[in-house]
Image (cartoon, rainbow, N blue to C red):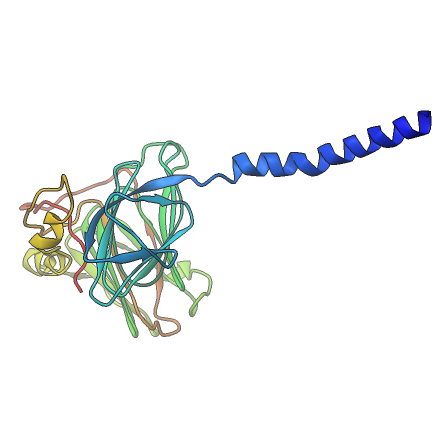
Length: 272
């Protein structure tokens, strides 16, 4: 009898050990919301399934657009992500309270309008197959083509660091600081000279990320407006990237922000 009781107790204890991880996984593994679909033009997918306006976007969701599609995600902290046509992006995590955001742009074009980061150790980073862009409330445009990476700074100070080949370590010996109204290119040969860029040229680049009036009208509660600017923005265009032509981007001075005059306003979705 005692032996039988001991066996029952042993089985009960074993079941507790086996089932407790499942119970804890059910809580810890519950999907976490990163935000909602704020604009859709005309269709897109989430994890290969069709999505609708105002659908929730969860951590680790893979968002994709067709050659004629675009979408906008309204993150929970107030930031906005605009995914261009023929693009794929994974929302790895977005903790609004701790201000911890990690995105993966697999290919295509992404524009991120990021709220100011104020929490200790906060981060907002966009990873591509060959680079990382770190955003700390600074306004800049990052464009990646097969043979070069171009950085254009609208406000703030950005540090441009090339990588030692595709997927290589940052080559900090070639890091350069780029100020408002300046641009720099990184190619397989390294970092080029920092050059001035006119406000007209910057506005022209910004206009290429404007969303159509029809696309904005499709989003309930989002007014139709002309969009000609970036606000705390990084736009990344990723195609077939050649080795050694990419760069990591970090903020050179978190406490210094300079905004040029005639600042346009309004969000946008990248062009088709």
